[in-house]
Length: 303
Image (cartoon, rainbow, N blue to C red; front, top):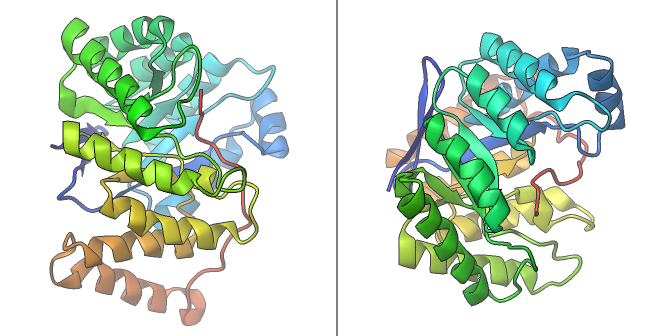
């Protein structure tokens, strides 16, 4: 099953037989106080840096979130989407918990966007899915409802069924345009969370075959050496059905792990992409892999 997202001039296909889709998480003010202040002042200059770094790091899509406290999020989303479309042809993920902000971004965007996100809460489903249908977008679905994020993978699967049935049945959204986020909870809170996420991914793959994503940094939140944890988790998750992740595309260690997963699962014919990436790194300034950037807080919403 293929989920297709596009800009005006570029198409990215997400699928179990496709290269792992790296969604750059950086254009997000969560945990970035300086960026929040800049956005409140109407200063979007930092976005240009974030776009350049993520494109250079290997991002295939860019998540765009303008949720700075006390800022006009809808206006910022319009300005950010317009700016980014002038900087890169990578497809965009329009990221907000506010329907009006999502619509402002979708109305501005030229192409088929991915909406981040909708939960299984009735009110959210009926507020966001009509926008997804109206603008011909794809959407990320989160298996939590009004009461909780279920702990058991089987209980999360129940909410995935609700999401998919409502989207396809009531709103006639093609099933291939639904991307499920199983919700990666921090292993620092419970070391069993990683296995529960993997089990949920496998259940989703086996029953529905839809594409999946998650906030890769959520799993390692609160742990030391977070990039190592994330890099170890991504190939495991890919083997259980994960086809994309919202992640720090500036981090060579994590991006390399995703590319290695493609190689080892036969999604990189003759290792062409792996070899090309290695050669490009050798030709970079200094002839070495770029320095790993500072760790950041998770950016994927869990409610």
